[in-house]
Image (cartoon, rainbow, N blue to C red; front, side, top):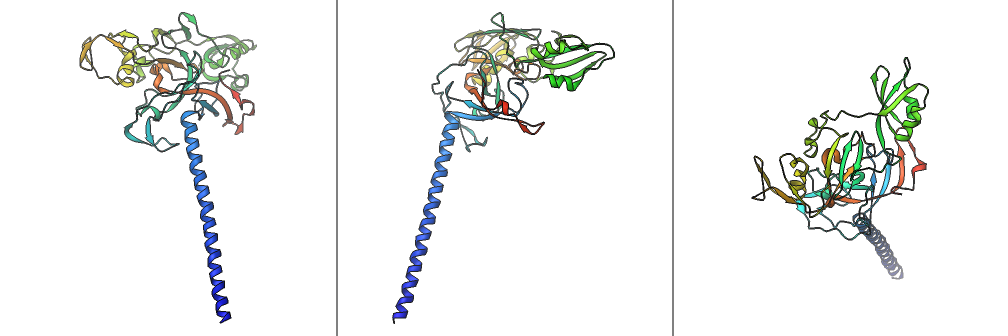
Amino acid sequence: MADQLSKEERKKRRKQRTKKKNKQAKGWLREWMDALFFAVIAALIIRTFLFEAYRIPTPSMEKTLLTGDFLIVSKINYGPRTPMVLGVPFTNVYLPGVVMPWTRLPGFEEIERNDIVVFNYPIDLSPIAAKTNYIKRAVGMPGDTLSIDDTQLYVNGDSAESFAGIQNTYAVQVRDRVRLSSAKVRAAGGQLLRSQGGNGYRVNMTKEVAETVQNWPEVNNVKPFVLPDNFNEYSRADFNFSSGFNNHHHLPPVVVPSKGDTVTLTPDNYHIYENIITRYEKNDVKRNGNQFVINGKQTDTYTIKQDYYFMMGDNRDNSQDSRFWGFVPQSHIVGKAGMIYFSWDSERWLPRFGRMLNFINE
């Protein structure tokens, strides 16, 4: 009898130990699940309202920002936007047709001229927050008058401020029977684009590199490469804004729209405002000859509903920007480029340690 009780007691104790272990395991699992849940929520809040990581995918901002730079983008500088779509966090998967009412929370500064800004690509057809992120320099503020003459940008009649990282294409002439070395150009910080036949080359480089190349013994002359003002580059581009202009080296004076401005519409200037009126501010427009019918009312004026910006890449001849597709609405502003936290050189398969932890707008 004692042996029987002993066996039952041992069995009971084993069950108790097993139950305790299972309870402990469930407790650990619950703790891990809770920690993961709160980590995801915290990351989502940070990404939505504070900061977001961004990788430079193209050379449009070189040499200021390089392909392979990884940035921290601050949303608190200009004010974060509340969620605009319903979707899967940290992905570009969203519920089609569901657009949430949103607002921009207060930031602690306004966009200033020449800030480097991340924004949603305006003419993308997706909902605003699901559009592709672009990064450019804000060269034109609301109300500014911009023009481009022989590649030189003018803001309100004055030459735009220049920066060390801005690149342009230059025409380089060398001496007879001499070839320009692509490796030498690359070592100096430029990129040899093509030979023009004879003694001519086109080289993409900064002003400082151009001055260096000009002093090479094999080089006769270096000057900016400029498209003729009557060369129609935009005839092959599918953008309303630039369809009324010729090429990105020339732009007649254009006023960057500001909230509250009333513009007069004509057949000659409608290409400037078409996306603003129809795509960004959601109006129905019909044209009857030289007449405009907006939301069922005939009119020749339109009042702008939000501020707009003119964005350009620092790699001026290798950037598709506002010169092509027009203004960026204030509603599309994501944030201010803050700091390079990592940089990867895909050609050499090495990190660029010298670029890490560098602040961008300083």
